[in-house]
Image (cartoon, rainbow, N blue to C red; front, side):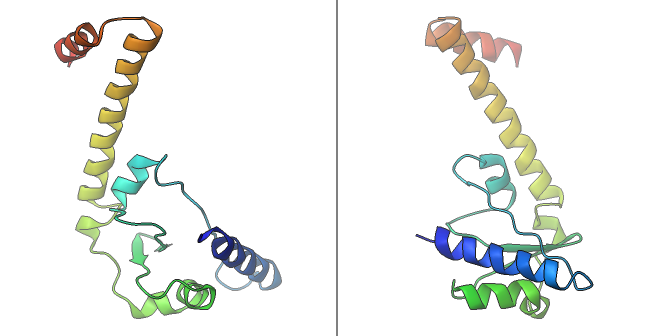
Length: 135
């Protein structure tokens, strides 16, 4: 539902980057939150779509009406009117880093479980026991 708006926002901002290279270059990225769970956890994503501006170490979350014009204005200048996420809780701070590490470990364990049960044909109880004894 939001995809066409997102594409239009990205095209507009990229066109402005080319037209005005001396201005702040705004890069647009799209993340599939259901597939990139570690990144979603790190940014504390609670719903989709979510829109963030990262300016150096500062992270600004867009909380307005999700229209093309409001989101482009936020990306270009309005984000400066907002308070950035506090560093302690930002994706780059200690809580964000800890979330990422915990998610990486959990994902690794689940991947190993899948390998043991699906590829190596271990019984689920045996796979669980092996992973628990190694950890």
